[in-house]
Image (cartoon, rainbow, N blue to C red; front, top):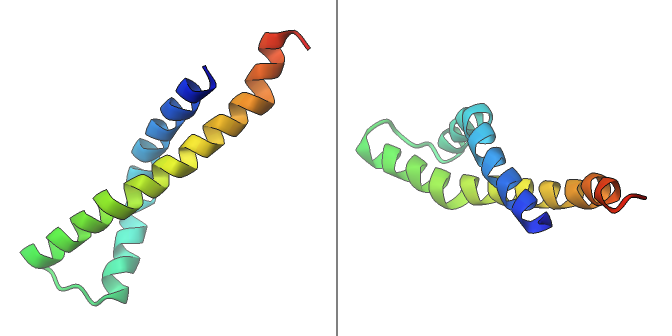
Length: 80
């Protein structure tokens, strides 16, 4: 059950941080690497989003969900 909680939390973090943090991170990435507008720049930003941002967001959410389950949910379900 703790892995299901961690997995679902990871998915929620991907969705939430995609809307909240991705515009800021994409702007920083494009400014740092001087990406010009156009189809090449869009594909490079899409690669950054899919191969870097989403996996990092998922890993952060997975670990936070796992920790939350261990700290909060296991104690309440075990009757301690």
